[in-house]
Amino acid sequence: MVSINPSCVVGPALCGKGYASGEILGKFMKGHMGKGARTAWPLVEVSAVASAHLNAVKVAEASGKRFILQNTTLYENDIARCLHAEFSHEWSVLDGLDDSGKG
Image (cartoon, rainbow, N blue to C red; front, side, top):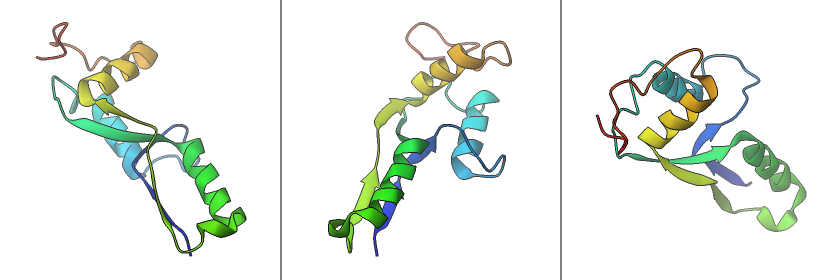
């Protein structure tokens, strides 16, 4: 058995709604998170999680091991800025933030 432990998974979802990482990103998009917070979030791309699961089956040496998956770490206000840059035509989570990222 191989244990795959991803951090907060980001990227396109095949399941639509109702998955934990999507709910977190939804909170950013609705402005409930990311306004000046200095909380750091470990993130991993969904394709890296898929590759890790595939390798867990293909690589014999992975048997009996645990793997923590993380690509990067971003602060909440940086996540909000990234989402705003991509989706600003739909919503704004940065209202009230100054250039330092603090409200």
